Length: 220
Image 1 (tube, rainbow, N blue to C red):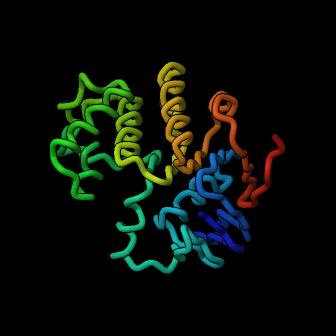
Image 2 (cartoon, rainbow, N blue to C red):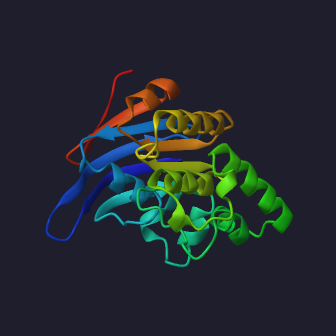
């Protein structure tokens, strides 16, 4: 499903975030990315979602060369991807429920079905009582849960999550990981960057370590 072939990502100033990475992730896999801050975990996720483009090498997703997609083609790629990044990119002129419904609106869902789905996932992340609130009034942890709800509402084939439990207390972190496990069990591919050893232990899957832009498999 996801393939990296000799992928290097170099930023202006010469910083090399990824160095000649080769990686294959099969459909339905659960993969954790671990490593020190600045190891390249976030960059790897952004390359898959076409938020960044490789300096050299090739990233493919379901056979598509992601680095060669036109600007107009990128939104179509992301329709089947749930994105949870540390800069939440929430819409602060819309309510909690409107933020969650956005992917369904874009996909053309019936309004009543979209509301039903949105309320169900908002309830699962513990924000149902805040569904009409503006995101600016939410705490950092609540904004994180809102971002996760928006990523999951469309039941994507692929979920990319960058430190999804980083701002959450232990109880909510366990709840979110249980949701991720449920999605994985029905075939969703998950790629999660995390420092949360409890999450890795709870979900199992495959673990890859990044170290200064280079990648290695971690023995189970």
